[in-house]
Length: 175
Image (tube, rainbow, N blue to C red; front, side):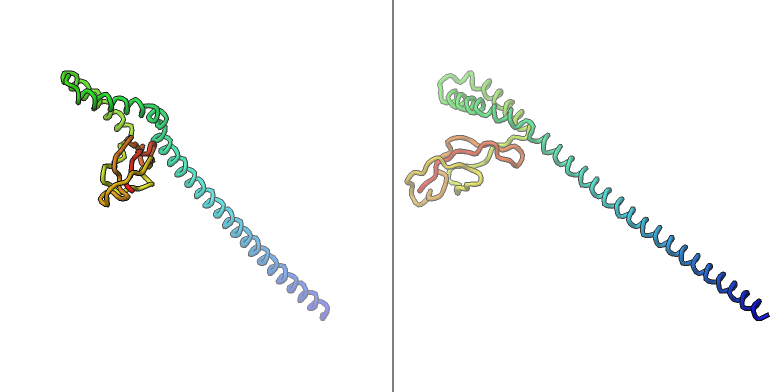
């Protein structure tokens, strides 16, 4: 009977070992599934963040392109605007004032159209401190202490489109 008890004891031990192995295998499978799930979740979050960055970048690029798309046309119109301003100044100085109203209406309409497209005049006046970031010095002339390092005259107006200067004002500064 001792052999029978030993066999039964071995069978019970084998069953216990098999149950433990099954539980260990189940835990390993569950751990593996949790690890795989965590990896896939991480991949998803990274892909989602990358897509959000892509959307933001393309929106920003689209907005920038829309604001600066007309830059080439506006730059090409600047000499026409300069010529028109000179013609308007000549009409104002002449004795023929009948044309002045028409020239002013055309000038206002032209400037309003350019403003609606985002173009603005770079504000710089005689007596302002010279700033190389917003103006281009074409020459320096001897001036009194009042105009040393300041704008003496504005030769050509400057314009900006949004925050970007598309033509720097040309100025004369005092030494």
